[in-house]
Image 1 (cartoon, rainbow, N blue to C red):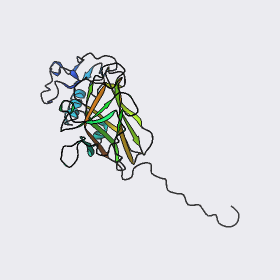
Image 2: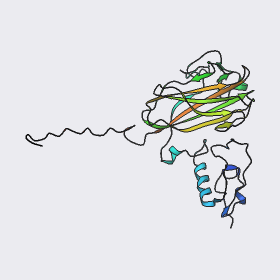
Image 3: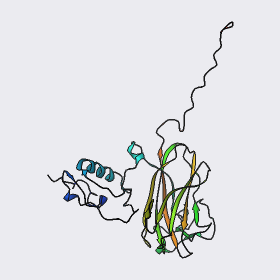
Image 4: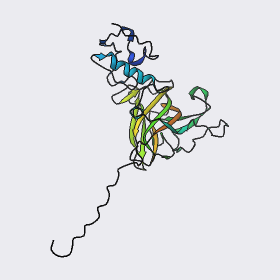
Length: 266
């Protein structure tokens, strides 16, 4: 019996599977990826996939326009709220470039306005090389009423083709040290997402746990070999999932009142 998947508009491309060839229980044909490379948010699947499970995955994938995959936070029934956006242009509509409060570290981070390296509007952020100034850090974002973050942005690597070249997303919670959230690399090494040089593509990191944080900052860091090795970043959207409980963080246990023993012998 052949199952009709035409009801799923993205079914012909999800996972790289030819769904028209699928039967009730079958082993799908997968594209071949180099070790460590991921296709979207899914690692290469293996083994026999029941059609019912695959149909559920397809339905979930189709239900999140623009992002392609339902996150763990969305599975709880919540809705992402946009808490920050930066296209690196002034908010007065003039079209002039502006960091909009992001930290300007120095020479290896710069706003550019040449059309061929901007994704939309007039401006984008350029990071280059691998120095102390090859970074850009966001404004402080209040997250006391949120459980998770999603960072979506567009990026264009340029001459980032050596196996050592990559860029990263870090996060700092409550003013503490920055910790690594994700890496994008030229060769898709294990734990990273492979990028295509000289082309704009979207990066998404979601379900960043902020349950124990009241404020956060994010930071992009470039690891190029020279000043000619660059990544352009544009249209950064930060979304947050509202907290699922009335109070955030651990709930304090009630204080036990001391017992007063009656006078006399105990």
